[in-house]
Image (cartoon, rainbow, N blue to C red; front, side, top):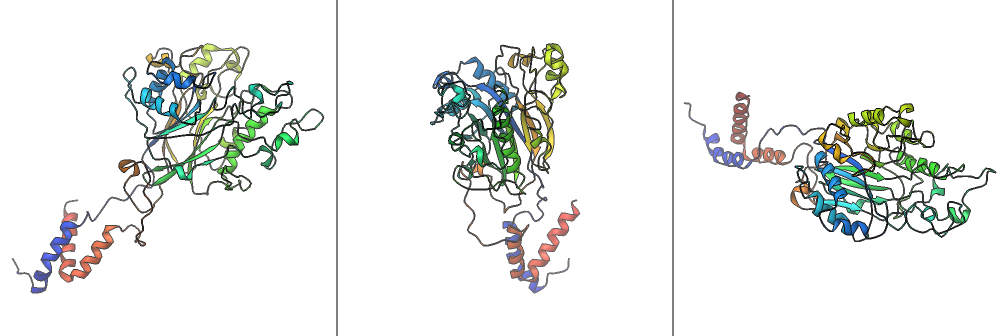
Length: 466
């Protein structure tokens, strides 16, 4: 063996030390997408007729409906889920009770699911307006609240997540006024006058519950969960006050993701919508089928045909078969029943409809999508059933998604360390695709020719093993 030169020998000890301390020199390239995320929405009908009833039902682990809701969620095991019709209380005690007494407890062989993060906010349902909004001569009914409801918080919603929710960046639009949307479809009387007086419109919020933008940190990539539950486009008259409000509640998100929301202000007074490169997923019961039901024409198409939105087209065999078995209005529907997400009155109408959605941004890869609607032969059919439903008249809708990844400087996964996203690093700028590798190269240069020689030999060794 040829002896080493004096220069090489002198540098060898330092070089060996550098290599021993260095990370792998050829990390695999980082994927351009996130790992697969299962994202779901479920109108679980966890609403009650009086304040405090849901808290009482969730305080113990033996409520049959809540158990069914939890088992349904466990069988799908979403990473992020919006639950509509979950009564809101300011203490969020119900959110915690459902997590600990139901989601984290096994049901009929389904494994527990853990959600360290959650969000629930105040809603307009049940908040008295003081006006006769429905024109029945009274100012005290549930239809006279700013959103239909018997008490404040009824029909609220909650988001559970396995990933951190950036609470400090959450935006809500509970108090945005309907009249402030340009071209709003404000209802009118037959003579062309406004259904609502100017005094009413000066206080009338567009959102019947709230619209919430919840940024979720998925291993360094932010996904904006856009959650809402627009009013049903029914229970009105020729003025179409609910149909038009439903249309404009859906339009809010369409404008928000399409760079057309300069007019929009959130509850903190911040204006505007999402940036064009933001990742998002629109979730919720939007009470609008593309072809059937009572929607104002084109309501949900504002999202389904939006150039910024991907329709994940979830399906189920159960929904298809139920439309055939139940008949009635279903037999004349134009939307294919395999897309249905709700089981409603068939005679006379409206029949089963597609009204619950998981809609991510363009550029997102859809791995799979489905509606949790077992067939009658399936053991799990007991969770959906027939009227009176054991769980809900809606079905859980889910999609498996890979979002475009944000290539920010890498940092430990927040959910693997602690519940709060770590603050930005105070270090200076780093070379792209560098990290510790650039530091290694700098040290090798400092070590001299011998260090470079050893580095070259190490790379040749790695190539020989390929």
